[in-house]
Length: 246
Image 1 (spheres, one colour):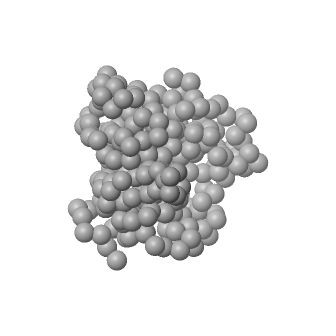
Image 2 (cartoon, helix red, strand yellow; image 1 turned 30 degrees about the horizontal axis):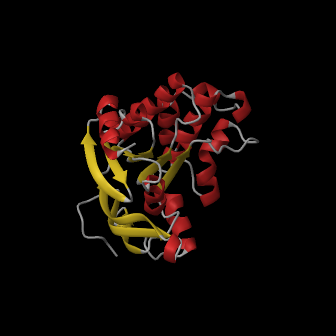
Image 3 (cartoon, one colour; image 1 turned 90 degrees about the vertical axis):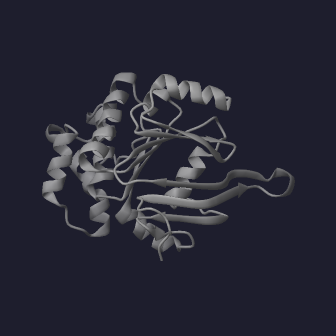
């Protein structure tokens, strides 16, 4: 089953999501339609409670929608079983989390290839080498997480997310736990992944400086898309957020 839209790595059509019931019912997403083109680096921003994390979770199949459709690689994931979603995420979706989520007993190489090991798939060594070289991890592959700096740990997480050649990588506040210098390095690496590797990146962030590394910023408020910024600067993002009441 395919969704009727332009070719997109991820697309949503009129998705709604509510929490609670009766007097406590809150619309987290309200008829949101959006598409993310392959190879784009997009930041999702908005005031606290705007629905940006809910949108990311629904796009990634981590949460269900009340109505509407979500598609990844033109395959509608709405209504899939948990098992089907697990298989799809393993093959088509990568995740980069603020907390890195590395396995402490595994070294960097083992952490990077873990998703393929779990899926019983062979590592494409040429692709592995390209990613590791691009991320500057060649000399760190035998180190365990506690032997790596925060920036190096996040690079391992980025490598792990890219290795399966997913249709899209979701990054949830990927620099929130990093100092400004290391955070800038990781953001540049994400931008490089999109620009040079053709990777689709969707990042949720509250940081205008982080958003300035993206090709586009999507602005949310009260569960609805309020606007977009192309080729954003930190100042332009700040001004847009101010208009939203951030």
